[in-house]
Every structure is written in structure tokens, then in C-alpha cells.
Length: 160
Image 1: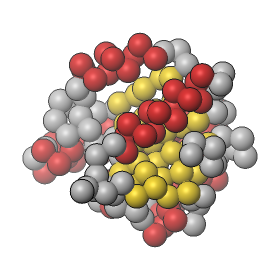
Image 2: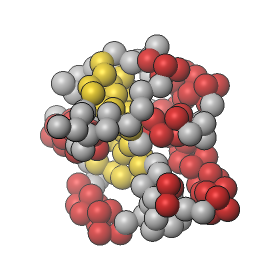
Image 3: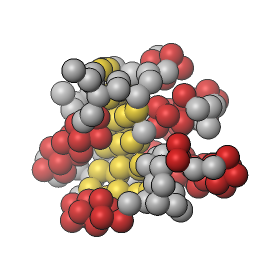
């Protein structure tokens, strides 16, 4: 379930991030380095504090400067947050170029594509930076057709 090179957890159900974290823990248990970059979620310190316990094997980054999720921000605040999103995206590309980890989790990345905060060209540059050995997990609600061509496995998480 966690071995494909590019995996997506998508859908309107709960548990996409949790599934990705499960893969992170499994991978770290096998001696791999894992980096998770979270987008659009805000900066909730209590969650980050817990996730920091997984370091150094699993490192979690959020580039958000606000406590609120992206959807809760005013239009002006969203414009400011786009700069932070770009920083997170550029960091993800750097991680892939330098081979810093065996597994890169881009949490809520599908929302960046869905809201057109990341272009098709940006996605192509990200995927072209990936080495053959690096695995990537994307999470989010809406699966993008643009991303589909890179994906080995899609898990759809639904509400009951």
C-alpha cells in the first residue's frame, strides 16, 4: 500500500493525512528518511508539537504563517499566504533535487492544483526533479487530471 512510486489519497472522507502518516511511519521504521510538507492547513501548533516527536526520521514542515486554514482566510490574507505556499512548493522541489528523503509527502497538495495555486508547468518541474528512488504521496480532496499521468496508485477515501 505504501510502496508505489507516486501515490494519491483523495476524496471527501477523513483519513487521507492519517493514511499518509502511516506510510511515513512504516517507511521510517525501515530506515528511510521522510519529509512531509503540509499546505493549506494553517499552523496549528498542537498538531505540529505531536508530529515533532517523530523526528529526525519523519520531518514535518508547514510554511503557513497563520493559524487558520487557507479557506478561512480573507482574500487579502490568501494573497499573502500564496507567497508561503510558493515557498513550500520550492522547498519540495529542492528536497527532490537534493534527494534529501526516500519518501516525500505533499499533504493537501491536490488543493493547490484544484485552486490553481500551482500550475501544470509547476507540477511538471516538480515531478521532473524526482529521482527514480524517491516515492511521493499526494493528499487532497479532488484528484487532478494533470496529476493523474504521474500516479501509480490512487486511493479514494469516501464519507459513509
